[in-house]
Image (cartoon, rainbow, N blue to C red; front, top):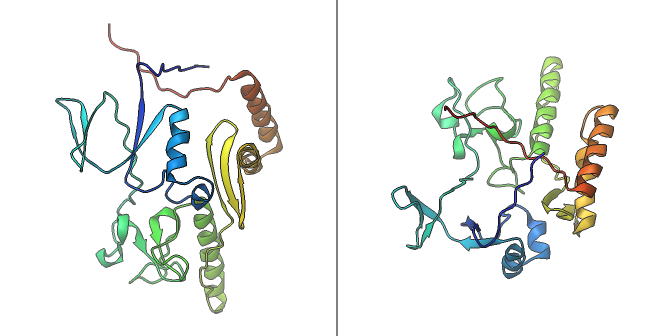
Length: 239
């Protein structure tokens, strides 16, 4: 077990985001907090939100350079820019879309190919509610996989395929101890209630009753004794 304490007089966290809000795909976050309120709340946790786009990093001066000319001195840079799909040999170039994702039709079949399907983060398809593609979430992948399996069975017996239509079961995000936001079928929650819901839903998704009990017990101990573990990979240096 490890505890990491960063004194605010020697360390500061700056969060640079080109989007208007800190959680661009979490509409329920916007429902509770406008941009100004997000900045105020972030300062309470020692975080400064900067609305801008990174242009470069100068190793000589250890500075992050923004497109507006701003320079920020730092020794540690954590870059988070989303994901890009891995190119699969044999997939035509015209079937590759934004972010390297494979373009699929309404049956999740790869564009320009027969009996080849894709699902999850690798695939991109659109419908009326999602003209730019679906969010890269586990629920999307699970629903797409179920549709593909059902369509393969239908192909075997000569029945017409079903069309993929994403059913949004809601979104949740935890932003700290006892703090979370949730949007479930139009119902909005925040604070401790949303945080407890987030914990229960994640506990429900864990396989095996024994695993659920052990993890719940571990969570209870961590909550009351602040014994959260920090997962680090340490390499022993040469002497």
